[in-house]
Every structure is written in structure tokens, then in C-alpha cells.
Amino acid sequence: MNIDQAKAIAIVEILAKLGIHPQRRTADKAFYLSPVRDEKTPSFWVDTKTNRWHDFGDGRGGDAVDLATAYLQFTREAHTVSDALRWIGNMGVVAYEMTPIYRADEHRNHDDGSLVLKSKRSIQHVGLIHYLDKRGILLPIARRYLKELRVQNTRTDKYFTALGFPNEEGGFELRNPFFKGCLRPKTISFVRGKTPKPEGIHLFEGFMDYLSAISQLQGSGLADDAIILNSLSCLKQAIPYMQNYGYRVAYSWMDNDEAGAKATNIIAEFCQTQTDLRHTPMNKVYTPHKDVNAWHMHKLNLTL
Image (cartoon, rainbow, N blue to C red; front, side, top):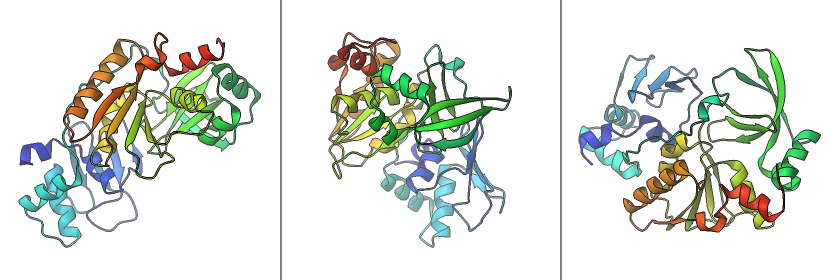
């Protein structure tokens, strides 16, 4: 790995590999407890647009290589630029470039930071249970993966109840019969499979597709691991989870539309850059239906 390749790697992905996750996020910044010194109050931030970091505690900052040298120095390891490049390379994080994909209706989703979680419990609301029934998702399966959330919209001061599917940074995807949005931060969700160190990783667009696939297995769950993107715009965030974990096959369950086809092609292209990782698109299973949930509902003779 050369220095330009290392600088192109997302700093948030390097930190995630270290098990370090943001304490809070804004539209273009992620705030952390410093990985290069001891502290109890987050004063280290990453600008996700410029891919630069700054530590207000000691005034240092820079790019991914600067972070690697500072981290190695803090952990009392050799910390030359060559050491930093080797360390980044050994982490298995690569600068795989991809064009973000957005659906035409994504701008209507309410993920602008105005939503606040007020309470969380097991699913009990009759309306949500009825919504799950119409989607073909049995309550025992739903309760295994979803929560019932009470949410406040701080701009309107109104409250509503929704199903919540947790993601990897403490946020939730929100669904009810009248609403589709998220509680920030928005990112992917990772679900461990039943088999330790499985050879397969499954990628789904949304959690309803994932729950539909599980339902087709009589609720037993997948043997392999699964990534739920929660938005095609989060596809890049799935890449670090697919690298160097010993997966042999990546199964994609994208929608049967133009955006889904683009995502499928991107996943296929990425797999070609990886040693011993084969791509298997699963679209033929649920064609001609738009997505996995629509196929699942059709098999159950359900309509919304």
C-alpha cells in the first residue's frame, strides 16, 4: 500500500476496525473519545467529507496516515510512515471507490435530526402488530429483531410509535403504516448468523426483506452472517465488514429495479477485487416481484 492509497481510506473505517465508534455525529462530523491519548470527554472529531481528523485536546490532526502514526506512537509501537502504511495494510481496510446510490424518494425520509427516542419496549402496539401481519412477519420473529419505539418530532412537538430496527451505531430504522424514516445516525445493521465463522455473507436493502427471508425459513434464521444496508447510500459502509473475514460467497438481495441493479453490479465489482470472494445475486428467487418482502407477501396471498 502506498501513501496515496492509505490517505484515501476513510478514517471512520479505520477507527471501526479498532472497535472505536462515534459518541455522536452531525451531518459531516463524527465525534470520538481520542484514540491517541486518554480522555473521558470526546474531543476528537473526523470530518467525513474531507476525511481529516482533529484532536482538540492536543491540537494534532491530519489524514489517515497521520492518525496511524499517532496511534502507533500512543500504543508504544514503531511509528514511522512506513510502519503506518504497513499497519493500515494489515488491517484489511482498502480504499474501494464506489459511486453512492440514492433512490428518488429518499429525500422524503425523515432523518434530519429532528426525531428523538423517548422510550423503547417489546412490540405490543396493536397497530404495529397488524402492520407486521400484513407484511407477513410473525410476531415472534419481529420481536427477536425489532423494538417498539416512542419517538418525538422536536420540530412539530408531536409523538408517534414505530417499529425500530437497530443499526451498528446506535440509530434505528423506523417503520409504521404511515411513516418510513430513521433515528440518526443512519448506517448499516449487522446480524451474526447461526454458524460460527460462516463462509457466506448476505446483503439486504431493508430489514423487511431480511425478516421476509427469515420467515421463508420458518423463522430459524440464516446460517450465514447478514448485512442490512437500510439505504443503498450506505452500501460503502458495508465494505469493511466483507473484507478479510474469510467469507467465500456474498449473496445480494437487492430490489428488482434500476437502483437495485446498480447496487448489485457494484457488489459484483467489489467481489472481483477480493481473493476467494464470489458474488451470487439472489434476484431470480423473487423475480418478478419488486423485492423480497413483495415476493414473501405474494406467497402468503397478502396485499397491503
